[in-house]
Length: 128
Figure 1 (cartoon, rainbow, N blue to C red):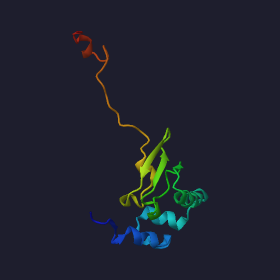
Figure 2 (cartoon, rainbow, N blue to C red; figure 1 turned 30 degrees about the vertical axis):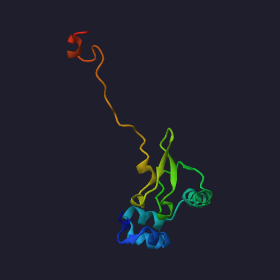
Figure 3 (cartoon, rainbow, N blue to C red; figure 1 turned 135 degrees about the vertical axis):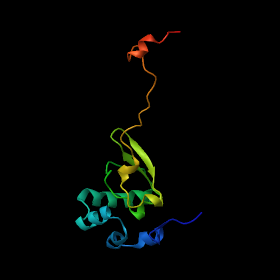
Figure 4 (spheres, rainbow, N blue to C red; figure 1 turned 180 degrees about the horizontal axis):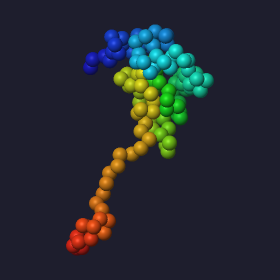
């Protein structure tokens, strides 16, 4: 299988880069976040992530707006979708996306058949 590369850089090379170096090759959304600096909650999440990853515990979070950093690759993070925690196995192609993009908050609508007299025409359906 071919190794994943992001703009010519392997995941190992990305892990060695500082946040400022990552911002130069990442998308505009990530660049703005790095320029603003991480919020105190995001900083705490990164610190706790490293501690829990070393102990290989389940990592649960409500931080849906947190960017997926190259260090997260290979970890399983449980992201809250408003009702439950959805497990995400972080793959290299997810880097620089947000955690919430992969834990959907709504289910896909699957319509069943209409009930009796649900519409004007269904009133004349023969009942068997």
